[in-house]
Image (tube, rainbow, N blue to C red; front, side, top):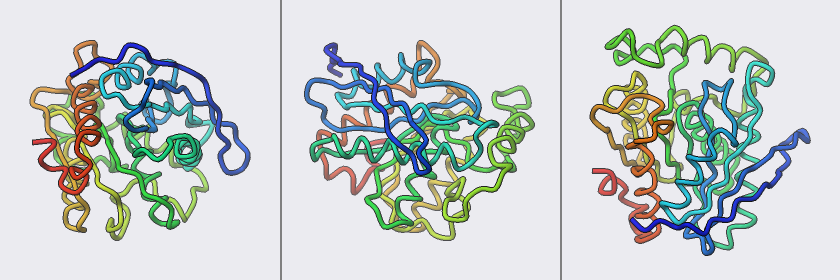
Amino acid sequence: MTMITALETTLGSAAASGGARVPLLVHRPPEPQGWIVWVHGGSWQHGSAAAWAPITSALAARSGWAVVSVEYRLAPEHRFPAAVLDVLAGLDWAEARAGGVLVAIGGDSAGGTIAASAALARRDTGERVPVQVLAYPPLDPVCARPSYRCEPDAFPNKSDLRTAWRLWLDGPGDPAILPTPLEARNLAGLAPVFLIVGGDDPVRDDVTAYADRLRDDGVPTGLRMLPGVEHADLLSPRSRVLPAVADVLSELTLDESSIETPERNLS
């Protein structure tokens, strides 16, 4: 894979509904092959665009895509759906500047959950629905699936993750936005979804359940399970998820017809 070294990193700002200012950290190659709005992880309570900058800049360099990292509002001070609204504002900002190339949305861990919720909100309002590229998103607030019980010492453990969900969701909410796509009655109408998760990740059953639901509802879906990979792999210096995400973006760039059959990209 060709590495792009001449990245321009700048700060941007979008406005979410209600007037909240949303800072953006933008890594832009000279001629972006696409734009992806990236949502960092951190259990909805931690992390920042600055802390994830080594990851998002590396993703831009590996893929040739512009990466817009969203500094969304964190729980418990700002509960659902504040983070989703911030990401939707970042998506609007990126689309206004992308110059006609493909704009996708992605995220890791809790950021992937937020990204999936934002894509579903776009579908439900009749706006353009972005392609999703998600790394190990937790999608079940109850954490009930068997993978959460397989390795009691694995990160994240069921108890801590359920607490994180509660700190994010306990609030008035918004009946027009769902916190997880697994709560949707139907997922038809979403753009293609690419999912990447580790074989040793406790959230893997959430991810495969989402993939199954998407396929049942006719959404082109790619799923890649990486053997031996644990949760939060993007934070590792030897991450295997980062090149997998970059490969998805590069393949979308090289062959736009692959959007219709993403399974072959992730086999």
